[in-house]
Length: 209
View (cartoon, one colour):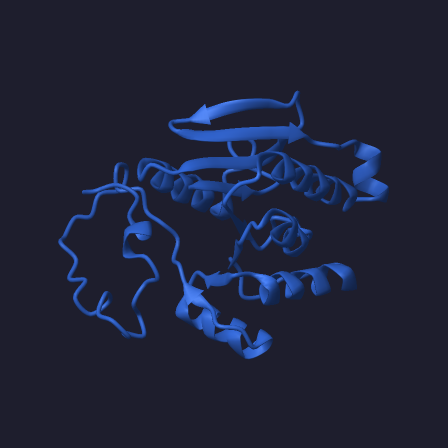
């Protein structure tokens, strides 16, 4: 399966929580034989790199000190349009968006390209600066084929606020670097219909211990 992860920032420029999640999710999926591409941006020249089996496409980032001062949201809006055009060209089978992916055209792309998308809510409180951003965020949640949250509490909050089912997909852990020190009993957490059952237990551990 061809899977796309559009997100405006990524390694080596930014290494926060969302970027780490994308890195570990994409690495796990590529290790399962999927064709995975991260679509991000760079302040330098556009380029394509590979992180193991994961393709990382760096689109040109439109940025300038005056732009940050007078139209600070232009950079992310431009990224959203560039990433959308890239998705049209590459036509992935599915896209996995996170809260700040800024691909607000994803519902339209799903119709045009027959491209289902998942929307992953990574914060309980999003401080959107404009009414358009708040509406776009809500539209992505209600239009997504599946919605994820990092925790059960977050998933319940999304369902209560937006009226859509929300699954739990916790941050992954790359056990090649962070090996468990004790054996975990997963009987309860993987039992069918368990409130704490993860959507895909394998996705939470990206390499065997």
